[in-house]
Length: 174
Ligand code: IMP
Ligand code: MG
Image (tube, rainbow, N blue to C red; front, side, top):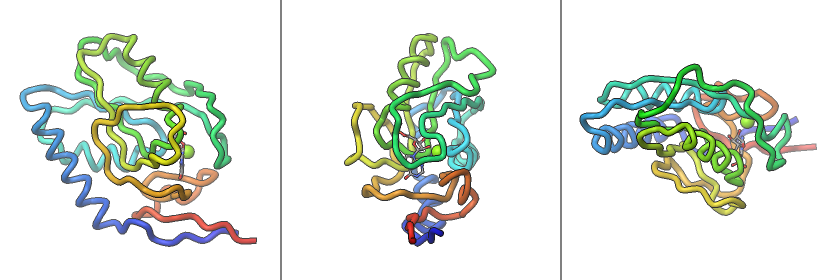
């Protein structure tokens, strides 16, 4: 079995999301934004963020798989569900739960850029910079965290723990 300890409490996550939303609202003033939620991990972050951005916002969803139910990165990325609508000529903000090796995002950003958005930027709730294998430019980061396996606020371990309202560290016990 595993156990979870609190790393970032709910109030801190929410405070940070409000700050990021404020910054985005300033940076995109006068524009309409298309938020791309990377399922399933980013769904909590995306909705909390979207509610607080003071601009017209559209949402679309994409699902990619690189991990399976494991905690080790394979480096392979597969589109499981593509966007419903075109992003051509739009201001696109990709919303990710966590950037680890960077494989997923570097693949995704290149693919989305080829669809000719007006602009594209990346927003992640969590970043583990010490784990980076592929260089990715991140425009908005919630928290930089140490190299620990985290769950909650959308993040899972084998599809569990996503609905925890805080971010926790998963401890494996035998
Ligand atoms: P990357 O391609 O290695 O950057 O992996 C990014 C994806 O790996 C994220 O979208 C998560 O689904 C998953 N991931 C990486 N680290 C963690 C973690 O600590 N907890 C849960 N999922 C993680
Ligand atoms: Mg996952």
